[in-house]
Amino acid sequence: GRIAPRYALEARIKIRLQRGAENLILDGWARDLSESGMGAFVAQELKLEEHVTMEIPLGGATATIPAKVALSLGTQYGFQFTALSTRQRQQIQSAVYGLAELPPVHNR
Image (tube, rainbow, N blue to C red):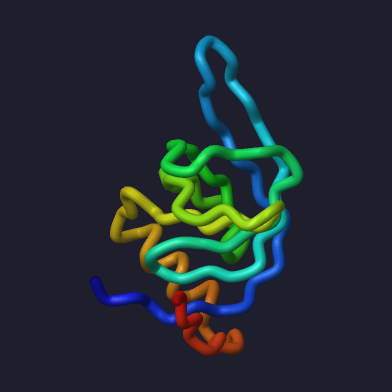
């Protein structure tokens, strides 16, 4: 699929997930954002393919976006958004407007 451009974004985020009967809320630190997902540092361990809900501050509001863990590299994680409303897409577009576009990452 088309990979959306990634933009450098530094922000504190929250990651909610359910593991068994436990509801966890983890703190994360966003590194980059695109319309397809986000890169972030998370101190606690997440599992690949685990489904989470991300709370991301975007332009004065908090976007709550479902995502799955797509990449895990130590404490650095890649999240792929699994559902994005039109409004959230617009929030992301306005949040990244004017931010620096990051060069594409060539995996393997």
